[in-house]
Length: 317
Length: 212
Image (tube, rainbow over all chains, first blue to last red; front, side, top):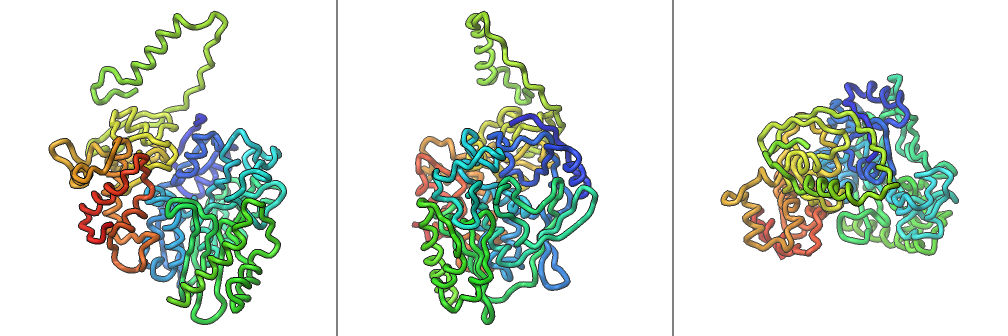
């Protein structure tokens, strides 16, 4: 690791101010992704602001029947919260499908949203990667792209967002709450939080420099069957090739969000209104405009088949 | 290096002094020593390890794993991948299992840490340690401390009602069977592949019936 200085923040606004004031400064929460990247010198912050003891680790009921999840709530604590298990099954299941027991005990709600891609060319510092080194090119194009994105890609980046939790939050229409260095707060709908790569793949979220996530709010629960189905190369402890977060209400429009397909959790309104047409119609609408590589074209039929399994599970529930 | 255990010479110390001795004779005349990287300012940190209060002054880059192994000479926790992929470094912090390689020691001021050395001792083994011996839950043994720490904490998670991805009903009380053990222990890799016996050892302690 490159040398850095370290401080323990005293409040969220002070933490945001500290990071905003120092170029090269970063927040550290669980650290499970950041430390991995720092050891590889993919990340080399000059200053770390520890935000672990700011009291942001509670889950509170909101007046409109939802839940406000503090930024520092660990993945295990969120997945195991009795209200989440009962009312937001898709979120609990998505969290539990990610990483390992040890990592979920440390990884946080905000950190999970902000984790970096696992694209092999991002991780290999000998390779071109616009995300790691803007302007260096994208070695994944024409490279080993089996696990990479099939839709919403650009000529500069075909990385995927690796989170399972964020896919469920996209299906739930969660809202991200932040504070910036001047103490100003704002809310960002999860749909607008993660960006597509375009020509600036190194800008991954709507956050401004120094802006810190303080909480994620879940709206009142959607009753019905909640399913998170993850397809991967081994049975556990692997990133998704594709995943589906589905909420199938007793009546009304179902919701489908997809992981492993794009630079952000992928959700298409037109696909949800086509649900009566079955898996084929939903998949066709969700993947309209997809530009897979020869190596990841298998994801297109895999989405349809996994949707068929999800719908069958919903009917059996 | 803080020498709190009274070791007069560590293996690493011996290697370093050996290398230094060799370099005085083998260094080519035109070779320049590499410029030393400016050391980062150290940060004081205090935590309790296996019931004993420990105070260290650390470069903030030191991971909890390196603090335990290199500064406190508790070498039971192993460094496998050093990237959170293998689980050999698993310890408990505040009763929860974590990868000690992916957290900075300075982030744990005031925390209660338990390593394999604090779980049991020869002649007074923790039931999980005894079960690993009984079921031969290892071959080379390198992953074993991490496996045992993860297993003990995992069974507590089940008691605390933490579900898993393979739990059929998220809201039901936790039960443990071989499938649950395999899913919940997937963060611990055993490259000797002693998995069958590891599952048997854990199931024995858990009192699980449905064990394949």
